[in-house]
Image 1 (spheres, helix red, strand yellow):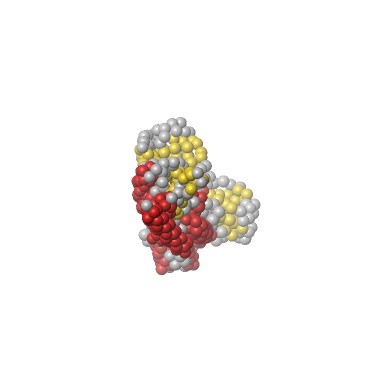
Image 2 (spheres, helix red, strand yellow; image 1 turned 45 degrees about the horizontal axis):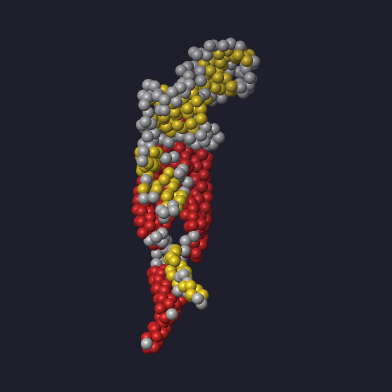
Length: 632
């Protein structure tokens, strides 16, 4: 009997020691991130059967378990992946929002300054100082476009660097998780399946850190390992084997870093759409959904401004009487051939109508029979049996060679617009503020007819006979005869007061009632130094709906600023809300798994008392044993 009591006390003493050790372990790790509180699980030892019944043999420690709730942990992982995604997106878009919204360094001040200078020059076209002010304002406008485009391009380079950094972080975590999988499997198999709690905590912490970079799916295995999947089901960890990611330059856009999956069969490029969470997903979403469209939108404004301004400028005449040329230089659309192409086709793209431009990029593919052009912003696809073809204001031409099946080309119509715009003319005298024609009425006219100053019909190139003198001679109040090169010299042309009369690329209106024999002449403008007709038309472009067919330059830029601003505010609100959700989910998990020092202090007292009581039982068993010995 004494031996039985001694064994029972000894088992209680051992259980109390393990309880004290576990409680001390909890207290020591109270500040360790990812530590889950551990708890001793006791059970009774098998009772001894006697004639008097079953007599208890004390207690045993079945296991030391960690207080872990898979559901709560999954909630934290899901909330954290979304929070990291939103936070990464928000921190990037803030930079664009600050740049575009800056009242002093944004595009709005220089755009307004350019047209204000043009309006001032139109009021005094002969003044060289006013003309030079237009040149300076044009340089400032071009520099504003250039600076913004350079900032956006630098952001693209920075995104490439951050993607590479995130990939390196992912691969590091993946390797460590695979190594811990191996340690956990070995540890638990050598301990008859008992959980390796501290190793499990370490792995969970690594998975949480990995999940901040890229949203993961965790599948626990029966042997204690955890398999990790990402994206569209790509395995990052399978038992003790790690796969990971790699970075590679896009074969169709060398300046763009893409993500590759390092599978056993080689590196496979992954679509960006497969990354919907984590820091990496946020960077990719920002690049494709905001950065690229913003740069394209800015480029479209610059291209449309340069093209429409140049067209009107070419319809004018400079201070020396020469026809106006292009005021702005601008690059055309970019075409990138995939490095994987096997054919030798050279595709070129040119602007045909800037008002029809979109802010999308396009992918041109060839399947061996037809060309397939996909608008990347909405997936709209068109097929063509041959080139050239014009789509959305861009003409695609097969300049040379031939495409092979599977060849691809990336068409970027507006990406280079803002970065390439510059002032083409170098002298203020070349500013074409006058109209190249002049309308006069005969000195001997007797009727009440009067002729307008006349305008040049666009777009350029102007009619070769534009400045050839043309005379309109009225045979009566109802008709007139035309004489002059390029007109066909019609006679008896019906006269409509105030109606357009157009020949050789110009248009005039005659009002009133001309008398028979009255003449009106349209010829070259030989005294155009003080003429501001073309300057007024150039200044009027400021409010014309030429961008996308329904917006002015300023409103198109304002639309970009508003879109970025709204998206930034949306992300600020959602990222703040998501961060609060992470805190709530973490708090719920910590309330279940975290260490509570007050509770651990109570546990210390409980195990201390249990230890002392068990020791007392053992002492009593010793006394009983001594009594038996004394009987002998």
